[in-house]
Length: 304
Image (cartoon, rainbow, N blue to C red; front, side, top):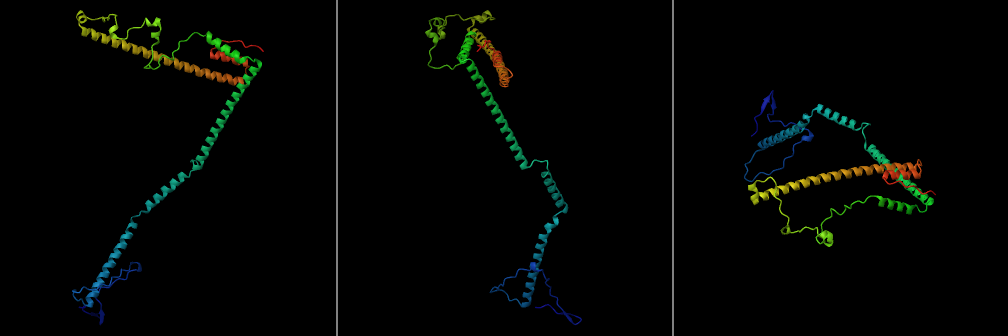
């Protein structure tokens, strides 16, 4: 069935909906040529044409809506945000490119300069040590030429000085670990063997000293005596610990003072060697000052 014909001024008017012309990039997808089903009702050409036009309109509207959605995201861009981002990047680049900021090549040059300074310092120290060794070797050779028996006389002087010093107790063997299979030397010495005390508690013949400050009732009570003895033993142990701590502190103080004295002596000896190398003092003055620094007795050098 077709639409009724309408005339205006004797001109026919087409009431069918018109399909707008779309741009080339939004052309609708061509529909496949579908065959009707076997039991489908028969549709005339006008109805089929109207159905096709409605489908074309639907696809055109859908394509237009998708195109609008794609363009909508570009409307959310703020030009001021773009300007701020550009200014931030420009400031960051300008700050990084400042002339006073160390660049990688400047850092590498600084590292190379430091390495060169360290190498030069090491070479100067090495040359100084070698010069000191050569000066000492030259001085010793000159002294041997002046006095052929210099080494033997120096050894005799050292032995005489060691013999003149007072005897010192040997303390290197006091805190050695106790071995399992060792024999007490006092057992072999008859003098020390008589002073040995029995090792077993049952062989002790000395009477037990009752602590003072107990009442007569506590003196007759063995438990009270045992508690008093334990308390006295604990007090004696604490006293020994306190004395040992005091001794250890004194030893540490003495060791620190000795180390400080040794460091001062080393500095004085270095200064004396520098004076001798620079020929500001003679070898006699050098040895005299060296003996005074080391605390050795002064001995006259044999004249040539």
